[in-house]
Image (cartoon, rainbow, N blue to C red; front, side, top):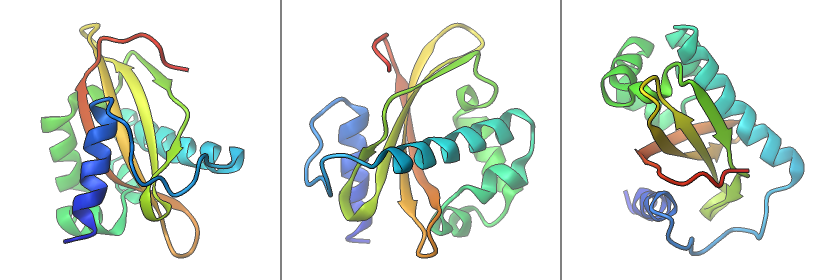
Length: 147
């Protein structure tokens, strides 16, 4: 539990636009930036296609254990984060490093009602190499400065 609190605090601070502390490195390599983005894009695409199994595949082991099944995971997403499913538009910020080899991928989304949201994804690297999504915080977003 001790390791989760710093990660959640780091993610919450990033979502609120506060400075990140204890960065693991100044930047991710271009390859890692692409890999992190591809995982988030793949999960968003799977959700848009209604493929809960595929969306659940991109979740980190702790998330998979928490929900136990793709059906429960998708029920949570649809009930709590409907703006992640079939947004009208997405704008990706550059992924940044976090503690202990983690990465943060921020995505600005426009929902079907035209509202802007900022989704901050925390990703962790699996021991065998691929990135997996360990958490996501979503908050209303009034900015328009994504890159």
